[in-house]
Structure formats: C-alpha cells, structure tokens
Length: 102
Image (cartoon, rainbow, N blue to C red; front, side, top):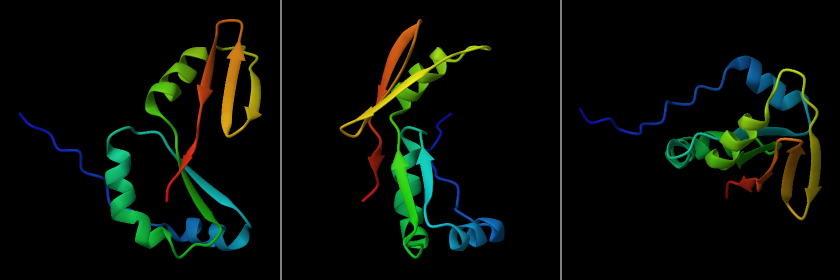
C-alpha cells in the first residue's frame, strides 16, 4: 500500500481571521517534516494577505529531541542568540533554528 504526503486544505476559521486583525503579530509554527513544504506551497497565497502573520518551520528532529526533555515537573533553561533557540536541563540540550518561510 502506498501513501501520499498530501497536505490538508487550509480553512482559515472566522475566529482565527478575527484574531489576525486584533493583534499586531501572529506566528504559526510548523514542525511536521516532509508534509510542511507541501502545505506551505498550497496555502501561502491564502496566508499572504495577512501582513501581521509569520510562518516559521521548526526542524522535526529537533522538536522530537525537545519532546525528550519533557518531564512531569521540569525546569528548562532557554537561550536565544543569533537566531538559535537552545533548551537545556539536567538531562540534555536541544538547539532549534527557526526558519521563516519565504
């Protein structure tokens, strides 16, 4: 059986559209891996009309590593420097480099 990486259609709910008009900055973070570029190509024209919206992609491997740091009672240290976000605790360190969509 063969599966295809099809992006679901973007239906911008009315609540989301109202939110985009009420706030100065809105950010969508994507972290889905192979399907994200397909989703972006399909929906960038719909999202381009919102001047206050930024879409940022996070590396799926790094987000999986970040999930590995999660614990019930956790304490994370976060450093933001030169476009990189570093999360650390006593169990490890994960660096993410958010990549804005063009």
